[in-house]
Image (cartoon, rainbow over the protein chains, first blue to last red):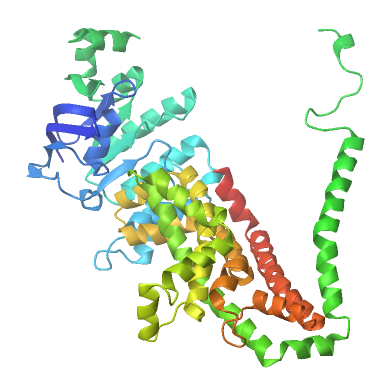
Length: 239
Length: 288
């Protein structure tokens, strides 16, 4: 699914989190929103997911206006910064949540749900942890479960907020490859937020550098590295 | 470094000398004994002074039975209502940003800081026969003051903070992320509430409900002002205890006091039993 962001702005009271920004994301791309804290990258991600609504502007999914769609209607697989796994449910129930929440007409039968959860546990290479609770998992395992839970709803796109933020360097490298693999297998349009330029450059097809609620530059990693458009970008990607 | 710098006797940094540990433990038990156990035992001893049969007989008096019934009825109405209000208040305060939040937080605490007698007087002023509203209600056959609805209202007011106060810190700490996750997965607001919010707050909610229940059954001051103390009609257990006591019916007074204490004891035992039964889940929730 391709995503079109047209002149989106967001104000919280008197402060502008996003000045009008526009961005075009081709279907199936892996995009990094890169910037320091306060650059508006998380706000933009939450607007795509329907968790915030823009003050002005439009969002188009596959050419049709999605600005007014509720969070449920967006069908975006969202991975939260601290994963937000349901702490009182097992891993299995976490992943099954989205399928069970469907209205009766479109809800798969229990056996089908179990089959899909098992397949997703295989996909994240953790086939044996279905019966565990989130508190019994390592940080890296939690991240992968959150990813599986987001994928379970057969999302139209994948949105990830600092997906590697809370992990140590070694696990981070492993999971980067994991996300790349899952993206390539599913072919989903994927947007992730990061403040780590190395992570963005290494993982993404398209990097969007943001600062102070504005988009500074959009481009392939090698183009941004070779031709930084502004002083901010030059400084940020060499730091 | 060399061995000479090591202390000769090693002990964990957080452990105090034996004398201090034992001293504190004994002091704590002594205070508990004098302030809690001794008075409780005295109440039960006094109730059973003339035998179990007499104590039970005193509870079967019509006035006594009516008081027990009324207290149970008040708790059965007030506790569910305040559980619902408490959840609503805690929800509004922790999950949304709006102006006037500090004011509402202060208002929630009001019943804690206002003397129960003053609370009772407020309801008499508002709904009593001397107010326009009260006169109208009486004329239409719905008396509030010196009737059961007044007792319910006063108890509702007094016990309002218990549930909200237990829930607010827990809900603040848990944040909104899990709820947002449920919504992105397609859950409706109600489904999110029943499958994510409620399970996450259930222990705090249970504790708040138990405290609210204990206070609803035991409230004296505010209820005394609005009830009019009509025997067999608007007399709750705490009011009945005082009336028996003032009439020198000490077995009846202390038997009812023992029963009230026993009700509190049952709720506490229930809570401990549940905590013990679900210890694993509790630990899992907290370590997250």
